[in-house]
Image (cartoon, rainbow, N blue to C red; front, top):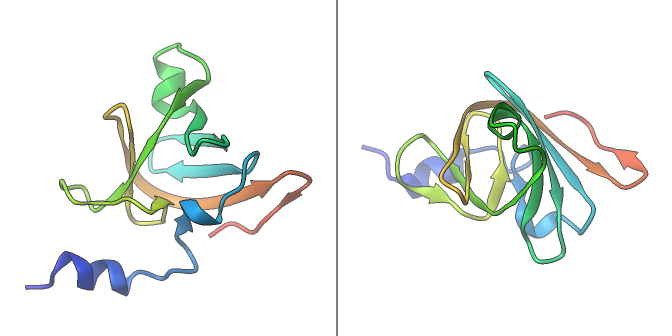
Length: 114
């Protein structure tokens, strides 16, 4: 049986978006199996999120924390905002469907899709 640490260490770190690599104003775009989310990074580490579940609720952009990413269970990889193959977990308890691709938009530029 593989441990959670072994599984996490086997992920491609170049495809995971680490929260410590984000600056205020960066936007993380996450394409899941069912939805598209855009998370604007705020100075305090929270995000303004639009799309997906938030749009379906009619709430418009919402300020929310990101708990991290998981494999679908209760263990959360808290330093990762998004990574393909994982599930994004918001601070309000919402869990997305499996992430298909991610990218970061820096003010004035856009990086490649993972």
